[in-house]
Length: 532
View 1 (cartoon, rainbow, N blue to C red):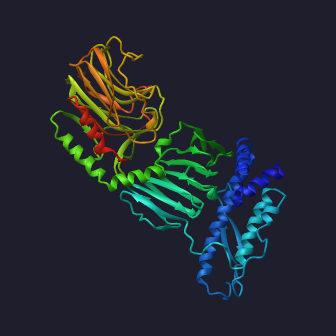
View 2: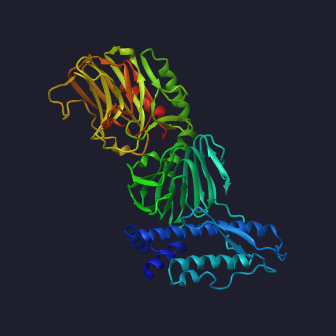
View 3: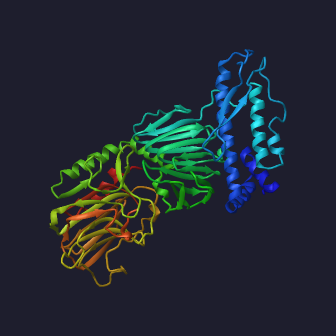
């Protein structure tokens, strides 16, 4: 049984009148009381359903001249009850009065005054709507839009300034930044399909979004085929793949997750993530960088307007003419290497990049045909979802044993720095590395959440390994024994082991059979930087 204080907090929250202290208290209570979470979900569902009904009524009243007679039979509206797939039909006599009149004073105050429990609050809210509709007035504009397209990046069918209501939209390429009527900011990344059910409810059929929800829009709900995410004034992301589990990731604040068919909801806080599939939910690894948020959109837009995509294409064209080129994968064609991965958006809106999410995800390559190189440059753009894994594979050749000296393993290590390991090589005396292989000095961690450019240059003749982060030289490691680099069958994203999984996306993987100079590495970064 809920206390009066519980009911008061719920009502303040739904009314948008909860103070910061109220929110802290409510969040604390929600974390430990599943029944309270369920009641909040039901209250928000009803509030949203009533809003949707009201907008349908507005449209009808707007088309009917004031003073006309009502239909002979009462109009019926289908209002979905909370936690149910069936709908409840409520008869409503919507005969308008001779002229517009405001609702009576305190017509909706009964919801706050109701002290008999959440059920009475539901009835009070419904009664409030019936009274207002019966008077022929609902205090929102009859032409109110549920969301507006604030910005688009790349090619898609949505235009800036377009107003959205209940239509289904597809985003085939690029990004779209939406703002709801209550001020929630939503970034949707292609490929995606979605529609608004009201200003407070967005149905995500497939695709990926991030949401930044202010206090005025608390209760904003994202509906997926596997369950719902109800915001409590926060920032979060939702990932709905074409098949498989939907995911919720909380960047800040709190979200209530409700898997379809699961009897209880789950309270998620900052750094939590949950997958929902087949009526079950389970905790999963947090992947904040899998989602593009509003601040990144402005940077991507500025770079495109300055012609960075053209600069990047020109740099790639020059590399393809380099006689030392071994391979350059930009993942833009349909002729992709085999493996287990998802194709997601690349650095540029509308481009593509493989994404590695689950243990075992990988892409197989066969590069170099077993040849050896005294010099080798490895470079790639990488967007990491999370760091701190034991190892994350950038490129791992097969056959790591004494019969194949010089096999190449390029990765990120547990210290979130780059590592280049060649089988049989030995560090020079006095090296600062503690794990037998050359490592970079600067962690990738400060760049989490953005695309970063990683490069490593190996020179067996000079016995050196040089590391670069975002075009800048980071560190050189001396080798006492340096075999020529040997390539052949290889994988990116994994190496047949659970501790080599790359968590994120990789773009423009370059393998060059010569040592690039510092200035070349810097120019490669500057030309391809999507935030410049």
